[in-house]
Amino acid sequence: MDKQSSQERPIESKNDGFSMELRLLPHDVLCHILSRLSIKDVLRMSTLSRPWRQLGICHPDLVFTEETFFGSSNTINPSASMTAEFITRVDNVLRPLWATAGTTTTLDKFVIKFKLRRKHKYHIDRWITFATMSRAKLIALDFIMRESGPSFEHYKYIVPLCNLSGPSGSCVKSLDLGYMCLKLHPSFCGIMNLKNLTLSTVSIDRVDLQCLLLSCALLESLSIEWCSLSSLCVQQELCQLQYLRVHGCDLEMIELHAPNLTRFEFDDDLRQIMLTKSWKLSEATFVSNRRALPPYDYDLDLLFYELAPALPLLHELFVLLNVDQVLMFSNTQTSFINLRHLNVNLDIFFDPLDTSWVMGLVYLLELSPVLEGLELHIDGGSFCRRNQTMVSAAEGPLLRHLRRVYISGFSDVLGLPELALYILGNATVLERMIVDPVVRMKYDLRTDYFYPSTNFGSNKEFVVPPGPTTKENMFWITKKRMFAKQHLETEEFRHIVTVL
Image (cartoon, rainbow, N blue to C red; front, side, top):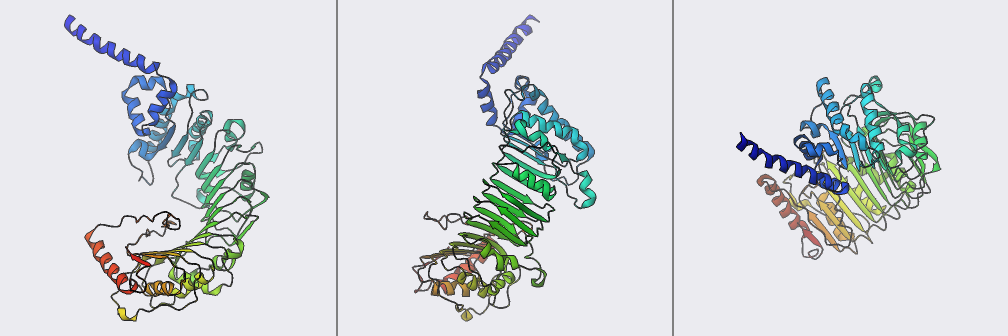
């Protein structure tokens, strides 16, 4: 018995020493140790180690998702017991931290992503209070809802924005909200230091949205996705706004006065653009959500008739279209007089029957008289094994400023080699054309995925991204590479063309 006791004493002493040493470490050192771990590792450690749990040291990034607690994020409709378990686990993590909230607890991120509803308001309100008391810089609440429509609106949680306004929310710089309602209370006085705002599938009327934007004087980035709004009009200046994204909102018009706006992303759910005084706007991205529809089911008048005059100082333009939509460029009379770099991501769902679609791109190049860089990324288009002797350059005007061209997904699809030969024969100052047989675009109609080679238009050395390694892919890539070399790497263009 004495022998057993003597063996236990050193172990107990060792544990006490470990606990004491841990408590003696400065608070910022303990926080730094935690910051090097993932939130899942921290939760495991707090379960196994009583000293860590008792210290109540807070990880700077509290990210609570289905994957955090249950190891997956594929549950479409979690059960009531699973939702209750999620709430309990979040509360268990936060409970020992409440005592230090507002004193030593400081958060960089506070994220809740789970299918929660208005009936969980008590818990969500407490979590938001904890985040603001802990001076969280980023607060993200995404209460995923698969259903949509008016009948589901009463399920959405209503955000108490007043808890984020005034001194209580003075540390919040980024706010991401998804699947909820926003209704401004008369006492709402703005989120004074907010710089980034993202609203995704958020129910808010245009008056409240206008008041929200005007009350955030430092707002630099605004993203609005899948929100039911008829228009977005703010007459007063948004002086600090630099980035604007509007996606899936079915807006009739957007009218903003943003003198420092530099980047604008939108889609064909927007009908009219009025961005007055945005003289610094140099980069725009357009995504066609209707590119999978038949040609007669979409109308791109905005892009092809109003985009150029609405954005006169545009230097970079990214567009995601299909081959039928490209043809519409031949109908417009306006020009992109300042455009320097053009990136076209092009869906080819079925191999075109002729080369007529190429004239749309030829005309687009003509509408951009000072264009220097062109990227064309093709998704689709099989190796057709057609009669290769029929390949000839498309006709069009001279391109007097085009210096760099990069084409990915190159194949013998009708029109593509003809376009490449046209550029080679008509770009009078062309320095380099890179032809890549690998398809770099991601085939996914639900996303606005772009493949830009970010360093292609710069003076840096172009880095070739890795390609597929499967034998099947390599077989077709080899055939496409041989086709490109045969028709483009001729003696006349050998010093310009590089086939990857």
